[in-house]
Length: 113
Image 1 (cartoon, rainbow, N blue to C red):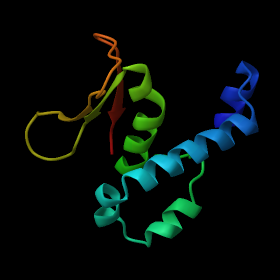
Image 2: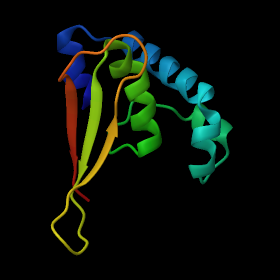
Image 3: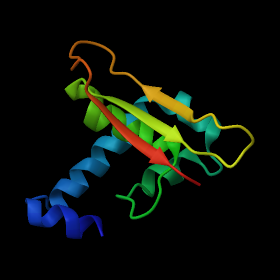
Image 4: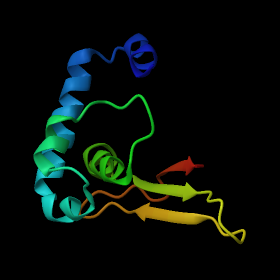
């Protein structure tokens, strides 16, 4: 499905491979932050990085944020609609750190289990 969306826009399999490499590198740089949350060995996760055609978990999402959005100064916010009691919406926010910041530039995703 992702290829069906990207290829007409000029994104190739080579681009997809480059994104995998960047994501893998980002995860290696942040191994200490990621490893405690894994249910499988870290090496297995690194060898299995693919462009998902399904939901991705927070580890992959954060790595993609660091690779794609943060260098452009764009933040990422995930709104979580849970089935628990109350009417509060959970939020996970990653703000760009360092140099470039695009004021008010955010990608907002909705997660609904």
